[in-house]
Image 1 (cartoon, one colour):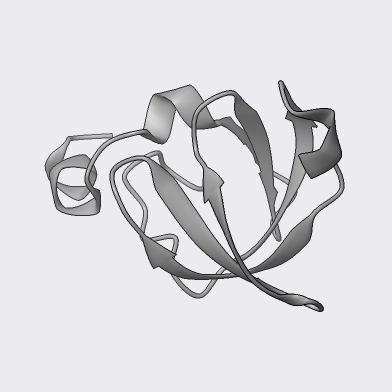
Image 2 (tube, rainbow, N blue to C red):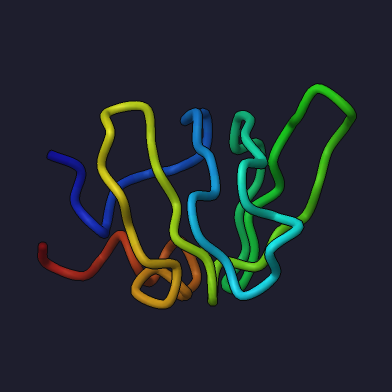
Length: 81
């Protein structure tokens, strides 16, 4: 099981629910992460997607609410799981 303090760069992901319905179904590999966004390499190029207001499904079939991981990567990784 993936913890909320995991490293996400390099992982495959897809958006399964979003307040922006045009993002639902978008998938790709996470190439960069900031406090508020993931940059995803998709079939049509790189897309910068907000973490918040999206539900992210990862390759291990775990679903994580983006509101829970909307922190700077270095701060999130320091938090005990």
